[in-house]
Length: 246
Image 1 (cartoon, rainbow, N blue to C red):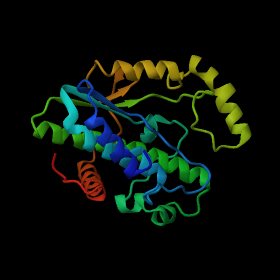
Image 2: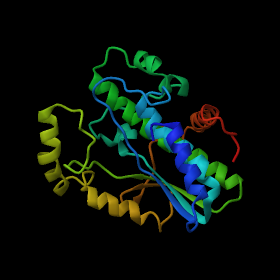
Image 3: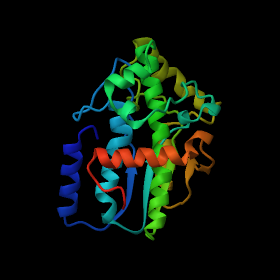
Image 4: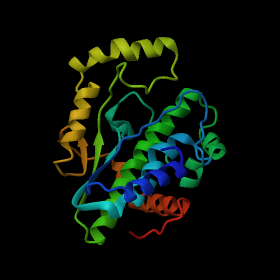
């Protein structure tokens, strides 16, 4: 998901393959980096590149392969919403040019530690997932196609089964792998990877807009900004050299 060429190659091979119709796409890649600014093969800041732009390209390339009554699920996170008090910093949305360009992104987050930069980039990318979801929903509706678009918060999933903290310090990784998993028995926002995987699979057969586990809820107030959603869609379309209309 960090390489435009790789995503395009996959889409080409998928379209050529003799397989049943495509019923659903699950956009589940979620990268976070705590050890300095990372860059994709295309020169894009990697958190934004993987979590938003890679998914955007994959969906656009496969959109015409999805059968009617099909579904697109985009995995976001409750960390996009500061009101949820997740312990993560609030998103810091800026123009897509700024979010995508490594130097400009560094300037936006100047004077912050590498960890804080990585966390803000992550929560911002999860907000971008919501903008993508709502703008795609709007455009699918206008195109008269019967495809449901759903976004999903899997909750916090601390465990050895998650590599999200692979760049953290040893003590932080120990807490994530061995102590934090026990908190799921007292905090509903902390879940096992198995539970969240089951919740995600459940969305293949249920509809709605934003789901927290198996409960449909509103996303953050900021996520409903239509101007930002349109801006991000238009910029992303230009970046991957595709028409804005679907």
